[in-house]
Length: 256
Image 1 (cartoon, rainbow, N blue to C red):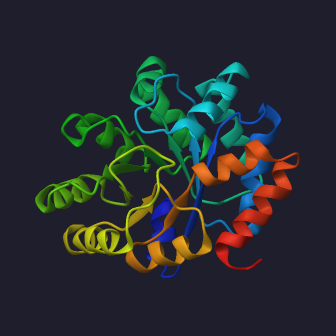
Image 2 (image 1 turned 90 degrees about the vertical axis):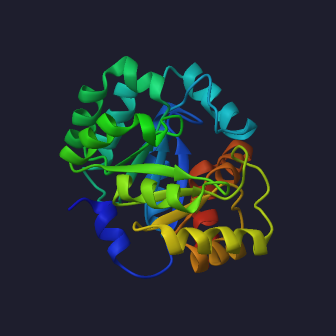
């Protein structure tokens, strides 16, 4: 059983920080992940920087540009995961767009992810209708394929997506890109209750989450909260990213 499956079998609040691999510098990626884990993060999402993202807002886009200027590659990211696994058993999912994965070779990519200790894969621009082979590849390597649901996803499609994914689904809180303002509480509640009624998999919620109150609200309505843009912005503005990440994750967890 992989670490994501084990994590979501346990009840309780979950916080999932997102980091762009290679941002702000190559040497900080593993240390930032470990700082978040020490501060109480329950799972980590690690992004592959990409020049033409469809889901990323300006803050994460800018972090990707810096990472690409730092010459980050998929191979380098997998090496960082391998390094992390020497000291950490935190559940870890990689988020990346399909082009870099196709360029690497899907079979080799998933196999190498398994080899270094990746637990889940998120590919925002891979619709479920075209994901059959990739999902099968993930499952045969005991990696969780994490598919996306949006506020306008019909109930029967929610069921279908959750059945295909099996272990975990990612709900975007808004119709838009990362960094947008989280939707009104009543609309978010209605949407996530609809997901709860129709999903057969646990599901986490991301986009627009930035405060302890947001984390509490989202965990009351789903199985975990993903924080990306707000974390990247704080790293970008900080002279001491490790301390900033540690303190912010503690704040989001309510232990600061």
